[in-house]
Amino acid sequence: MKRFLVSLSLLATAFAATPSSAQEKLIVSTWGGNWKDGAGIIAKEFTKRTGMEVEFITGGTLDRLAKAKVAKDNPESDVTYTTSHVGYLYQSDGLFEKLDMSKIPNAADLYAAGDRGGYEMGVYSYVYTPAFRTDLMPEGFKVDSWKVLWDKSMEGKLGLPDFDPSHIVIASSIMEGKTPSDWESITDKLEALKPSIKAFYQSDATSQDLIRTGETPVQVLLSINGYHLIEQGVPVEIDIPSEGAVVGIGALGINAGTKKLDAAHEFINVALDPAIQEQLCEFHKCSPMNQKAKVSPELAKLPGIFTTPEQWEKQAIVLDDETYAKLLPLWKIWFTENMMQ
Amino acid sequence: MTQQRPFFIPFLVPAVLVAVIFAAAMFNVFQYSFLEFVPGSVEVGGFTLDNFARINRPIYYWVLLDTFLLSFATAFFALVLSYPIAFAVVRAERNWVRSVLVVLAITPLFTGEIVRTYSWMLVLGTDGVINTTLKALGLIEGSIPIMYTRPGVVIALVQFAMPVMIILLATAISQVKRDCEKAAANLGATPNTVFWRVTIPLTMPGILSSFVVVFAWTMSAFSTPQLIGGGKVLMISNVVYLQGFSSFNLPFAAVLSLIALGAALGSLGLMKLATARFERKLATV
Image (cartoon, rainbow over all chains, first blue to last red; front, side):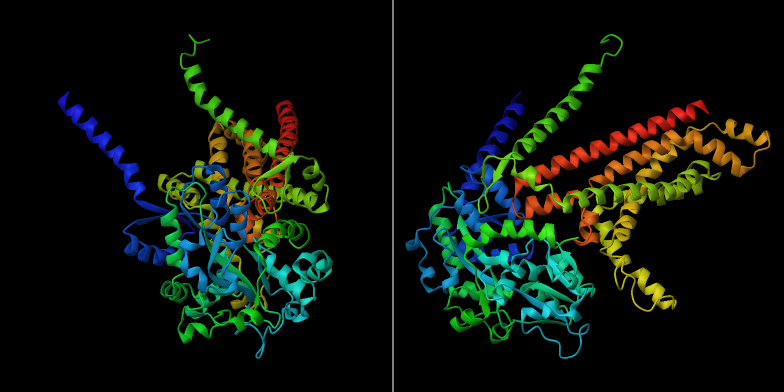
């Protein structure tokens, strides 16, 4: 009996200890793999400054949004790392707290693209832009305009993401002198791209596989994946067309209902610190959002890395999150019905 | 009844629980299909029939037809390739031969669907094993496109379905009494005639049921057409994913899911009718 009671009290202590240790941690929802490792850079500095540990929960962009929707008033995480236009969905459904900018002093030094409307802050940017295998395309080949993708010589060579047609729709609209909101007037142009498309990729992994194996020697590619392939010795050239490259922004927001508001604000502030931005961008090979961040010359010279206001103005196509979030589902439906198969 | 089968009710409880949970989930999907999708929001709007109206487009008919044809082709080729293996597994004289065959036939079941599909991508690709070999033998100059085509998807699906088909067929073949075959042979039938006129008809119930199982299984295939098809070959599950999870249009994805379920049940009903008629015909022979 005595042994039973001792065991019972130990068990009770263990259970009681669990919530208290969870209280000491800031829970951050992020993607897995490399993205989690990048968030780890922020977490390390955050713990150093506050003494609070960070615990990550990982998942896909939309899986995590679905979970946040189900959890709603009792969020699983305190901070969410996501793509800025998906962040708009969190915001529009009341899943993000309004940010208190006085608690994020580093936000004062951001490029305009870093301000995502008061509920989330842009942390870094990347581009979706044409890239190709130099050994599988004719010598001197360049994608100096998105128009090149429609060229007859491109027949059966192009790979596009199946999960997000926004990049090609946005770029085509700009190319045709329209705005992305006028996309319905350029559907003929989009349909004319069909002969060029060989396959649609489903993830970063399949994107890299398709270009590595030469299945799709030309792709509308996430710049970060392109740099990764180059590092691995795959002869890939990333071009920024004259119309610009389509920017994506990794953003942080605070889950509505969190009990660690101050710590969550501090986490975002740490993420925007120039020194952390430098580390983060060297790690992911992405563009910093803080104008005071100084990245290495090697990183700065890569196509799609924007470190000056002029580059942002001339090379970046940035769409506001609300338009992006509202149009993406319509583009997606249209694309599935008219461009795939 | 409880006296004759004392564990009947306790054993029924898990099945009923699973059925209730499944029915509740399906009811939720059904409910979603009548709700309005609001672009730029996770929340859904009020009652609408627009999601059903949207289905009336050629693309969705083609996807359903493709799903049916790919499933049928997969079941057919899996049957043709699996029967000889299942026959050899059951009838092998030596134990070690039987063991080797069983291991070879069943091992693919222990590797995941994604792993197997990735392997097929390496085999079927432009510079994959097939194209490289054919080029090395001087049989072709350029590469034959197999990836992102229907034949490519069927090849991978057939290999995926074969272990299950082999198990089902082997069970059916093992039930055939060798005496019947011996009697036919004693009456002068050649081995070929014995096989086609005795063995095959006696295993026909197993052939039909394994065909239906693989057909139904393939109707819900996702990863293989997603990766091998590369968006150029779409089955109904892929379209549900594209609409539901890529753009968060859950109401429309719910409609597509209901149609997929209806198509699968309808196809199975039709097959059941056909097989029942076939079995009746066999019984009278």
